[in-house]
Image 1 (spheres, helix red, strand yellow):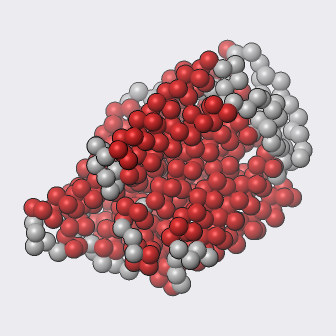
Image 2 (spheres, helix red, strand yellow; image 1 turned 180 degrees about the vertical axis):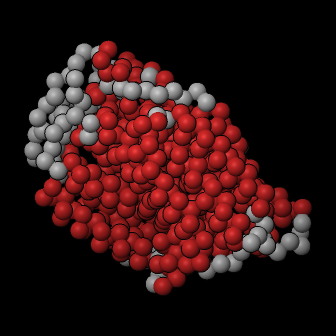
Image 3 (cartoon, rainbow, N blue to C red; image 1 turned 60 degrees about the vertical axis):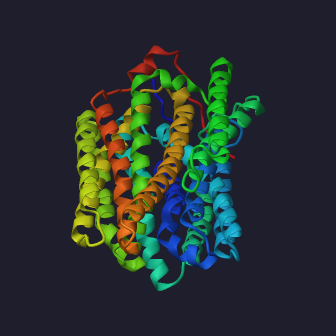
Length: 484
């Protein structure tokens, strides 16, 4: 039985989807290097400024599960082009923003576009390439998912130093325009347009659930968990997610089919992805703050210090993808998770106001060497266990949790960082500003290291899934793509 759909230009379609997702995911962290500039320009605190990242991730977490439904209503071509046009509008709005509120609004609009493209990318790549080539293809996609948010601070550091932070959005806008024109001529439809009934209670519960959870985590940066503005949305989010899950399990045509979590390797792989994204996004917001405010580097220099780690990711992702098809996931995920733990332990121990920059470079390279070995194998092995009719649901579930992980990582990292600063400042009243910032970042890496330990334990339970589970289900007829 074939799970593949034939298209004219599978590589071109993959390129359009991956580049669109890359620009969107780059946008997740691109402003991290500019947060201090934006805080000064609009006279706001770090807890408020981090909403530029957390708000972006919040919209993604709400929209991605809804996109699983949209993929059954609209053609692949319409969703991709629509996503690119909306992203373009958001980028232009943010670039022209006269105030922080308008800047945040532009970011949220841009996130809507990215939220449409991300799940479509994963689902389409699973459908247009045969299973024996998935490792290599998903290796490149893994590069997009990990490199884009990691590279954000590096590229934006250079842009901020030579131009100004609005140019981050102008460059994104140029790419969106070119990519939209290209997509109009090359994108084909590969989704099954079934137009299921839209269940508005599911959409409402999903929005309350993910929205409440991420809002509460983000507010923790400035408020105690006992504050109503924190525990209220947190409680609403947890109840919303529980009701959403119960409703999906009872529906004949659920918005997101949570039965994908009955496949054990999918569940474990999704957990590894969740923890990996959490580590990446936590690091992506903490290191620019540390390099600029504690070690007092310029934005450009801070970006260059992070470049070798990104280079490791760039070189290793295709290699791991190619070797995955031969070796399977287990060796990569276990060894990679151990290396990630080593990198975070190094960060935890070396960070101070006087740390030599080579130590940060080495620790970041070690961290991303391990991350690259974990992310793609975990994702590919997870999705390989699903039958084809569950690809869209598996992709939606995984991408949604990835955005929750990113928002949680960003919010919790800033919360722990702020608590660490306050604690150090109280213990050492005469400490300098850089020393207090360094202490806060070092404290936050205790949290990230704990996450690494959990990931390492899960890694030992991963086994190879070869897609054999598909044969146990009723075979699906391969449909010809509908153009539109």
